[in-house]
Image (tube, rainbow, N blue to C red; front, side):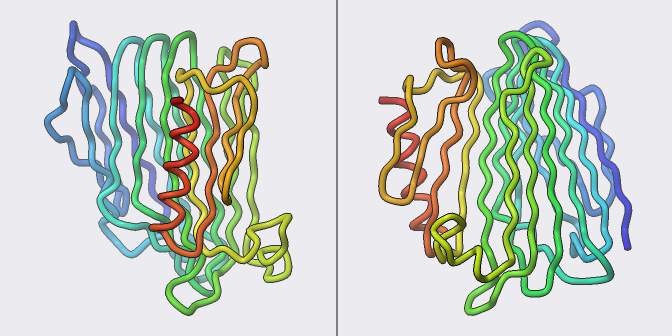
Length: 244
């Protein structure tokens, strides 16, 4: 079993965003890269086989007011079986006028894995957030293990999104109330991008506004597919609805 905590803090210095704290802990390895348009760019590298059953991994990210950060995944995360349940925690604090973009590679939940992933984000004022996630339920011709995800986002201390997902029960995964037999689920959360005023949906995708009906703060786009390519294309259709 592995316990690891990593931390990243980015602050605004004039027109640039500067990394003030960069603390890695294997398998959570943070590698800074040259930024663009004043934003800091950091690659998140999984430097060991993780998460295995029993592992607990925590990444804390703070983007100070006025700063901008892109956190980019380098390789897929593969949840593997082991001793007990594995857990990953992503904790975000995004200040007024700051922006954070997280674009990880897919998470693959292998057979017999038991994984719990939580994401907590606290936004203030005009903070902007973009998160994209792709969940692949089992490798090719493989039944998935058990997965629970939880997402908790607040804006100015008020709830903006509370969502949880549990997969791994064949009956639920095959039902229309669950994943309808699809193997890939991809989502994008955007805060600070005005969506259409009402929910819209299409062929295995949906787009839901986040926030008050009179002044939505962002959207949640969701798409299902038999494979990552199809799910990504369907997510693209949802995002097109968001912008047009």
